[in-house]
Image (cartoon, rainbow, N blue to C red; front, side, top):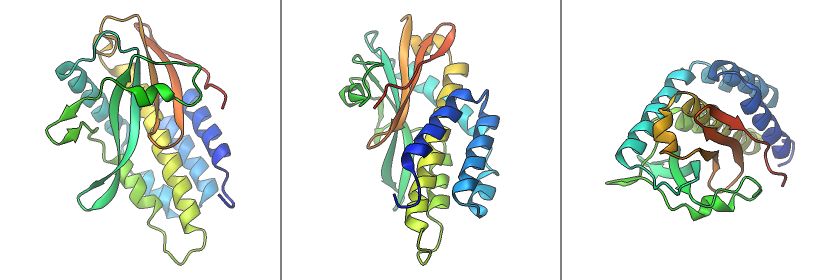
Length: 220
């Protein structure tokens, strides 16, 4: 992208997710970074969201999904995917849960994600997390006027940074707060990753009975 560096943004997001001690401080740092990208009202509105409450909704959703549709024992990795779908006559970003028996922490392409054998569904399709934050980010990022020359580039970057950051921090909250027995299903560990179905991903680490063990992102 012209004046915005997506590689640098990815590095920032990855660092903030791994280093932030909790949701509040993590999103505060993310919004501060976004203000460097585009110092306007977008981040001011984004500060009004109750991110911890939204993350707790996702925690409850994950527990409900795993309780109602438990994954097979041989699933060794969870993918918290971000997908764009068309809902209520508008483009929307949402999170879903999938699992694979092919989790590979050394795979810098996350090919194991495409081989998911566990994808919980409802009567209307893939089960999506109830959080509205992802859609609000999309709306805020693309709310700038078409006449602004850098609006398209800036919107893509802001949408990318905000959605990926909240996803990573929310998944860390899931690993911290969700019922560990449901998450592990009797296994010693399961890999944890999040990201866009058609874009960058973040390998967070392995979840064990002791908690999430962070791992280095495989080099691309």
